[in-house]
Amino acid sequence: MIRFKDIPCTLHDFLDIVLVHCPKCNEKAEVRKQGRKVGEIFCDKCGYYKKEEKVYFSLDFSRNCPNCGKRIAFKIPHINEKNKKDSMKFPCEHCGIVESYKPKYMPHYNINNLYISNGKESCFNTELWLQKACKGNNVFWATNFKHLEYLKQYIQADIRERNDFQRNMTMIAKLPKFIKSAKNRESLLIYKTGKTMRVNINTKELKTILDHTPTEQNIMLVGKHGVGKSKILTDYFNEKGIKVITLFLGQMSGKT
Image (cartoon, rainbow, N blue to C red; front, side):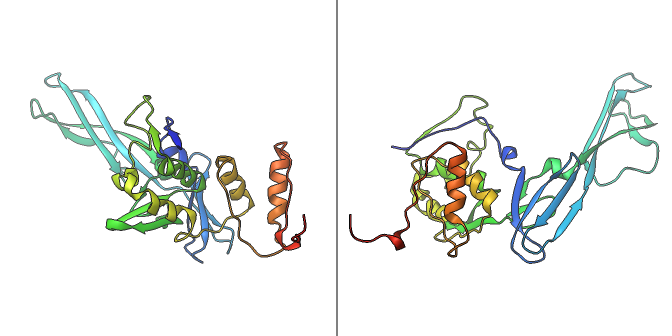
């Protein structure tokens, strides 16, 4: 029996790096933060690079009416640019008097409010690299390999334990029903294992997958002869103090 216990994390915890299709060559690229305000996209394959500081504003205004003394409050959550005028006219909903006031604009940077919608990330509007259409017009997607591995651990579990901390706020709690449904477990794991979803990874991403893969889970690497698959794995486990015995089937005879 495989057991899974939810941890207090949200989708935001898996948005540090978002894997997407490169706008230039359509290969795998990364969307990530550069500092607090700037988002960047980079492709190892073709060298495509772009950074952008997209910002929008929310308008907040709150004060007492100079005529009736009651509170006046206005809030507009999304404005593309500030009003060039220093002041704006607001009516009092209690007495109807209209006065000019200076509102407060709060800046918000898109990279800090990154979200996923219709299979795309919101900063550069590029398509996610890890996504696949499923039954019933559903789409199974992940932002990166760490996210994908966490979803896999949940999907394959026979026993799923919820966490009482912010019970309805975790990423697992907000998953769509088709992922939570046990009847879809087999088909979703097929998408995950690559029989219908195939992904290319580099050494850094492989180490990330190994860090988040249970010891009882097997991993198969596919690559050309001589690229260093065995050395990468040997070095990785040796760094953790684990002895590695390498067996090359092509060099083994039938004798014991």
